[in-house]
Image 1 (cartoon, rainbow, N blue to C red):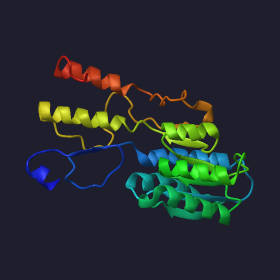
Image 2: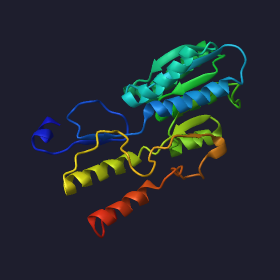
Image 3: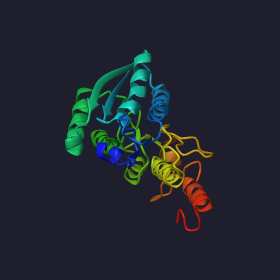
Image 4: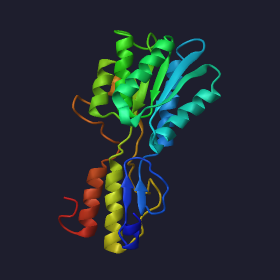
Length: 248
């Protein structure tokens, strides 16, 4: 990155939140704290269906985007008088599947009355959802823990459909790649500086956070349609601003 900076080559990040190194020309990603807050509110409302003190467990991932999402749930637990955190884990990125499965199985064994399991990363959530379903065969919340995570990708959708995962917050994080491409186009064509805002101001919404459950799943094999069609927006913008064939 230092060599690129010295040669005037911009380095752009997108997808999920990354570090604050000033060598980045621009970084574009969804608002992870907002995503976490929306899911935390959902969990709290669902747990209100159960009386008494509710035990909950957290499984985060060692990356800023997961930790920021999860911080919102930790604050919810901390401010609630009837939620009790009994496990605060970080999944091992080098042993994601088996390591997460063991963490979940150990937690469920130690806390058979657990009421919610929060996963900050969708892959860990897929593993954890399957482990929970195996531990409580044929059961659903509140007779087994509520299982929540992020991103309604196809693998997660399948587990929501089967009942292994209860809910996710979905956001079109792939829109950040289009934002990065547009910022680069403006930089090279017009020498316009990269926007330092991770969610730059455009006339449409790129990152709409939506709770996805079994009730509003997309058709099988399809992804959720975002609020605004950012692909058409950028293709039209580029064709208009940079000439015929741009954005094709």
